[in-house]
Length: 252
Image (cartoon, rainbow, N blue to C red; front, side, top):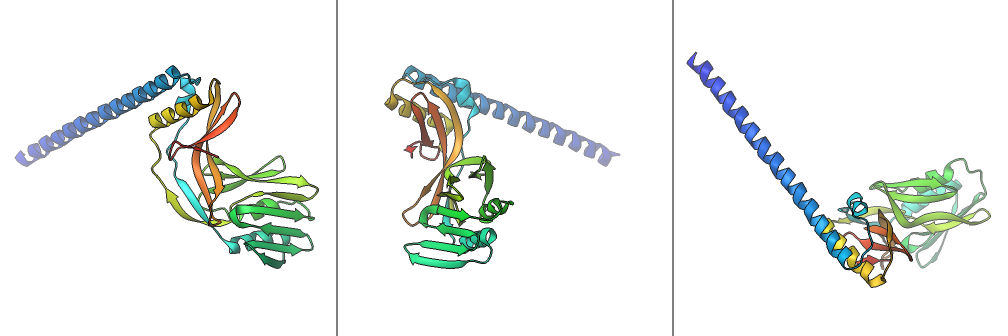
């Protein structure tokens, strides 16, 4: 009986301790959320006092915190993509990082930095989207919209990566045919990102912000690889611009 009572007391003490810890954690999380909300409101107040025209609820709806990614060019992935579209094909390599594949149904040319051109005379029975999807890895996804093809990274649009018609049966643009080689974290705190937005807006003068979208921006590196930088696409009176959510700096 004594051991039974002791076990009951221990169970009650453990339950009480768990309730106490759980309550403490809940209070800390609530205080943290409240503190973060206050910081974001303070940042918004600062930039609006400096002349920024941006809705606070719009800022609350956009996120940051994504990693940047670098993809190394993979000529084997390019070859597989060409063969999926063209079937058996011949390779021409004139140098300068240019690889051109040709067959009876068309041609596909790859250049450093993701630049791609193609001509396809066959039936569009899904082969092109299959070809462009073949090299997608590390969260990349190919989507078709009104005759053009765009890349998405972990659900976000990749600005600068699109294959579009240029007349007749020809298309061109930039794409990623490569392997994920590195990632870079260290995204800015959202309050600091809002302050960075305020600085960028003050340099442009008056103009209301219409929308802010979380995107990835594709850019070639000097080595011929491709980098995806997480950013805010800011639409305002007078045009759009991009702010890196890694550094807070404007990028293009």
